[in-house]
Image (tube, rainbow, N blue to C red; front, side, top):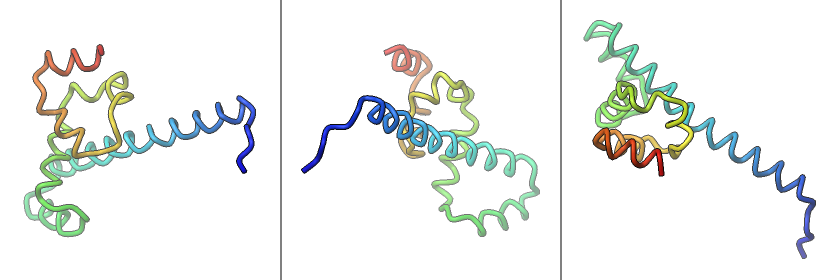
Length: 106
């Protein structure tokens, strides 16, 4: 039988879960930033060698590059609203500016 827990324990779990959930989004954006930087700085042959060492397909890398290059998503205000799913974040990059603005406001 489960017992009722104090409100401070609920607040603790809520805070911890939200914090770690956000860290997943932060990690996605960190990876996207690194992928963009590597693509920009490496010679083609080195970029191809790097791609061979990464656990991503070319289609995933393409999505990560698009996410990493979308300046609209770089704002902390926007990132706080995003799910920890690169594929969903990629779909969000496909929104028009007004659509994204409306979604953030809602």
